Image (cartoon, rainbow, N blue to C red; front, side, top):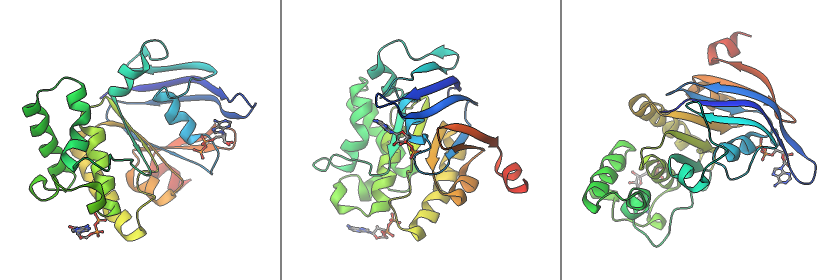
Length: 230
Ligand code: ADP
Ligand code: ADP
């Protein structure tokens, strides 16, 4: 797991919108930081900059001290797991094939990839004997979300970026997924940046919570305890 450092990050879109401004944030290896704030405060923009889907207008982003803004973005993205609200599994591929795509792209042998995939499916609560050969259309929303998490973990990423990962599932299932996810994180200890607009979720999952306000300014950066006591 890698440390993530944002130094004086600013993002202004071509139409003039300032989505993020003067943002400094340090995330330790193995720490789960939640970005929270009202819709439009720049949360997704931050994740997309770390994943280099877009470039900051100013400032630096470091992974373990190395500036990621130079270098090949495709290589970088293979080391970063990215989970979004509608996970976008390949509908014509089985669960195993969906999870195994990135390891195969990274040159893992068929056998090693298969072993890794089965281990991950077990870890996210989808025993491979039962679910491995199903297609995404044969799964519930919550199960698809778990496949998305397994796929993001498959290449043993340095960091995991999660954009509203549980908001597309119904509230009862969501609570269970959050609990399971917390147990999973206790085991795998990835550096995670998770975006949500749900304070309950932030408090349940975050080691620290970064509260952003309109214009992408950092209002608070605190542990759940500190935040609830304030
Ligand atoms: P959040 O994830 O917190 O809802 P976003 O990062 O999606 O916020 O958006 C932050 C701000 O940037 C919003 O005002 C949004 O309208 C604007 N924005 C996002 N993407 C673009 C874009 N491609 N072009 C112009 N403005 C954008
Ligand atoms: P989740 O908590 O993952 O969202 P649900 O509560 O929707 O799952 O599903 C409850 C149970 O129903 C699961 O254990 C799953 O095995 C089963 N199930 C859901 N969808 C299907 C399906 N399309 N085919 C077979 N079993 C299913």
